[in-house]
Amino acid sequence: MKSWRRYLLRSTCIGCYAALLLAGSSIPSPLLGQSTGPIHKVAGPLFQTSDRCIACHNGLTTPSGQDISIGFDWRPSMMANAARDPYWQAGVRRETIDHPESRAAIEDECSICHMPMARFQAKVAGHEGQIFAHLPFNPEKEGDRLAADGVSCSLCHQITTDKLGTGESFVGGFVVDTTKPKGERAEYGPYKVDAGHARIMRSSSGGFQPTESEHIGLSEVCATCHTRPGSAGKGCRRAAGANAVSGVAAQRLQGPAELPVLPYARC
Image (cartoon, rainbow, N blue to C red):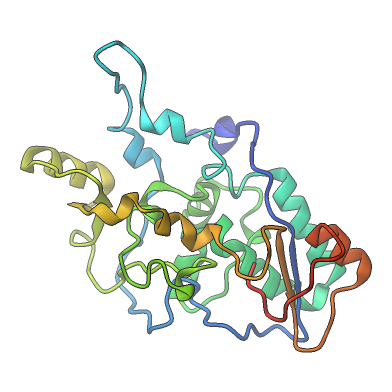
């Protein structure tokens, strides 16, 4: 099996710094990141890595010959490299060193959007999200493969319409259906798929059911990770209760010093 390192491309991801300055390791907001309701455990993995999708979604050209292969277009993107970006990894490592008492909470929070498949699978199993336990990525381990794939195909294309566009959906508050067994879970796309192609896609993707839905093209799907209330777009930060972020940390993590630090601002 090819090493993931062969796919490591120069990252274009700027990444957000994570300053989760907590009084303890608890997080006061709903923690499945992805749902405020109960998570129903299902047998088998909830996700597949992108290689299962790229098998079909490449070799695509327009009538004029322009290559529009989705897989190759996605591979060097910020989403594909969300977990591999060394700048982001270094930023999270710095925060865990500066605030060792909050390491578990920092890793769990930052993995919501940067290692969403591995984190979601961990939450379903009753565990917290981890980052450095997956590094360096070992292609023989399922959790590492899901982590390395970053914001991947079977994560975004399983996001349902539940809570989209509401505050509950922000900061990784997307909802993935965990109630259906393997072979019945939907992966949404903007187009209708005929029976022949659907059969091929189910086989290639490991059993997902291709399902037409207009919501997959809405910005509200992207907003589930790309909206951080209270952050003013300046990166991740959180203050616990009356605890304030230090001046140096505030400048490093928030940008301009005049920006206020908001209690419990999700990153």
